Image 1 (tube, rainbow, N blue to C red):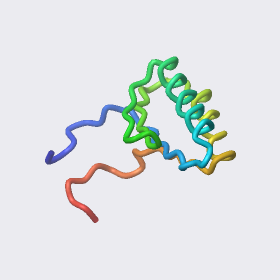
Image 2: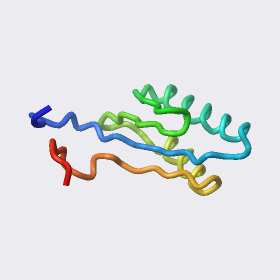
Image 3: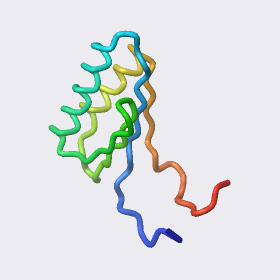
Image 4: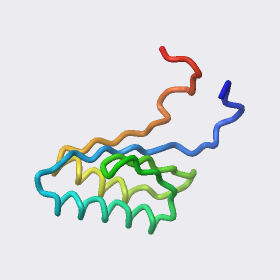
Length: 93
């Protein structure tokens, strides 16, 4: 890839779930997040079982999913962020 010709206008929401000694709780959280993504009709890509990147088309109501992710932050120390904060670059800074 050399350059971005135009952006899609789709931000990406990235989430990292923390490892847990309570495997059942982590499994429930993963299932809830997957179900919320599917019910919202969003595309996502999982890397392992704890990291997911979610494609967010313009106009998508993210409130239910963001509330679910925020609960993971509050209860289990998860992290989430919008991944379009910096322009694309082919070089590392």
